[in-house]
Amino acid sequence: MKKIFIETLGCKINQSESACILDEFLQNGFQKAVNMNEADYIIINTCTVTNRTDYKSRNLIKKALNLKSNNSNIKLIITGCYSQRFMDSLINENKDSSLLNSSMVDNIIDNNNKHLIYRIISKSSNYIDFQKAKDFKGFSEMKMNDVSDHSRAFLKIQDGCNFFCSYCAVPYARGNPRSRSVESIKKQIQLLLDNNYSEIVLSGINLGLYNDESNNNYDLSDLINDISKFESLNLIRLSSIEPQLFNQKLFDTIRQQNKICPHYHLPLQTGSDTLLKLHRRRYTVNEFQNTVTKLLEIRPLTALGFDVIVGLPGETDELFEETYNLLKNIDLTYLHIFIYSKRKYTLAAQMPNQVHGKIAKERSKLLVELSHNKKNQYINNLIKHKVTLTGVVETKNDEYYTSTSNRYIKAYFKNKSLTLQGKEFIALSPLEPFKDGILCEVIK
Image (cartoon, rainbow, N blue to C red; front, side, top):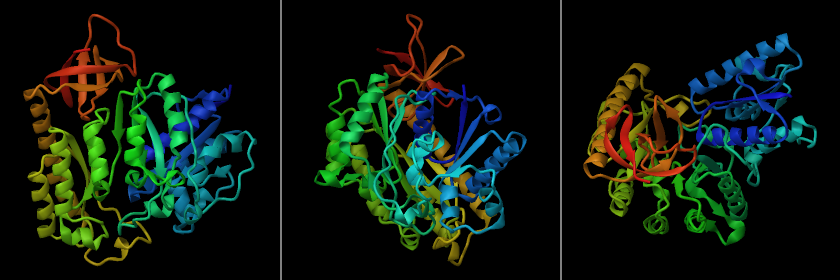
């Protein structure tokens, strides 16, 4: 039996796509390899969001090429945003060319044709020439029966972005916004429900732009209202949404649909209006605060996570202090903190007043400490107010089951009376802080 191994870097979208690719191989008689060393087929799903992920992508490709130099029977396929940018001729360095132009690379597949990887390898599909991201048309349909090793199912419903924020390489690798049809989404959800999933995470490169144009501009709110009708679907979680894309219709849907997890992730990036404007963000600090206020008014103690970039070109001590003070005074749950990474051919890479890496690291440390304190405050508030947590059973380690709760706090619990199964929906009562989350008792 042939063995397949997929190494994935980067975002939840890449992870979702890799899960779909792997599932198709498994459905067609392949076995999942434990590691790259024992695989007959190696797929590397790359990322280019930072210099660090470029570096990691190159290292994985080097490792696979070394393995193939000792075993020419290995098939090596490369896809993802790093290879997309290279093939689009946006990256021209020798260190990229020597790897991706290697004769030992069997296929480089563009981002919009990942769904064809199994069929290309099995020769049941004639792969068209590599497409540049600017030429992507139509949503690339990828279906899955199972998400290997996961209790929650990440469902990609949107791809692409045309915002072109000054620092971001993603639009150059993912192309213009494209959305999955509602009928396809419903069929996929039913398939996942039939395989005992009860939490679906709706995800996209720019999720708030979801729009089924063929269906009277059917949008994200319409989709949520429709899929909430699936009786065995207990939780709908939304991945990152741009702050300005929370319109009144979406707020109303959030208020009406109890299946939506009270957990939202917003890419703030900076708390300075000066920097927001400079880096082509499409909202002001005041508009961001209004979005947060409305979400907390709808459901108090909603979990709020923000992306923040430190060291953006032009970020002075004073402007960073604006960001810090905003975050200090807002009811957030956690921060995802990134140090600005210069991406070639983006606007920010050409800007003056680049911030020294040492200064950016110092600012990052301050925000990491703030995030840690905010998370602890949030955990204590959940316990104090005896907020019921729901989720699906994930793993069992050291006698404790775990679940990523509907409020995104890790829940730990025991159940002496019966054995719980993975993916099983549960309700929990919080007891006390424990490890990186909360120790709970099972209600039902």
